[in-house]
Amino acid sequence: MNLDELSDAELVQRFKSGDSLAFDAIVRRFQDRVFRLASVWLHDSQHAGDVSQEVFLRAFKGLRGFRFRAAPFTWLYRVTRNVCNEFNRRRVPEALEQEPIDYENLPDAQVFHRETARQVRELVDVLPERQREVVLLRIFEELSVKETARAMGCREGTVKALLHKANQNLRGKLDNSGMA
Amino acid sequence: MTDDIEQLKQNYRRIEAPPELRARVRAGLAKQPARTHRWVPITATALAAVAVLFVAQLGMQQSPAPDKLPDKPSLTALARLMQDKPALRSPSMSQLKSVKAPKMPRKPSLRSIEPPQSRIEGIIGLEEENPHV
Image (tube, rainbow over all chains, first blue to last red; front, side):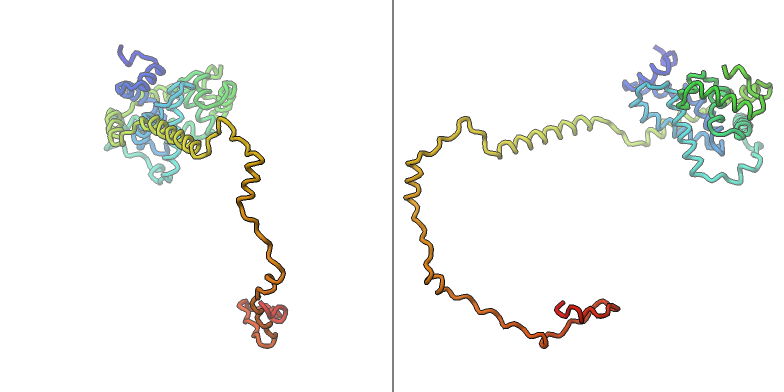
């Protein structure tokens, strides 16, 4: 059976059973999401690659004891958040962050990545942390209310309330249907 | 959702991890020392075995519980035991008096002892209060 056809939980179960190829499939499946989230959570998105690597190294150890109390991506998201927070705490926000990014010497993909991440960060930085989190997960990552609540460790009603407040803070820019 | 947010969202979802990320993860895993958890059950078994041996040894050191209580000695046997042992005679008064106790040392006079110098400065009157310290 093709590993890519398995569900997230089945893939993790395969990995726990000792299938080393399953971990490669896990990285392949989640690397874009982890990388995107890291790009936005980090003060400096150029380190998103380092953070993503660290997330998967921790996942290799941590998923062995995974108990499936939450979805695998929920767990990965929390690891990503923690690693980003550690990284941000270690690194003082440098003056470089204020300077415009020099795109001339970067490949197009990197230009696109860093500029988009910068714009998303600019948008959500006006929000308090919890509202920022709910906007990233619910709106940008398109998780369901239930999945967002699980990832944030709160109730679904809290997710809706946070989204409503975020919408107000962003002056109605978000779709109201996202709160349903 | 406003158009600009929608567009931003689409751009965000098009962000991809760099192609070399998987290779970096593999390289990072290769650097980590191989950790197995096989030592856990082995260690647990060894510890359990040591604990069992220890408890067994303790049990063997203690006197084994007799299956049968020893017979109580008869009165005759007790009486014979007493006869076998010589009775100890208590010493007489003359014997006690003959034992000479060593002489007590002479009581020292107060004048011959110099009061020790106080090591703690600033305490006034300590030497006067307790010259024998």
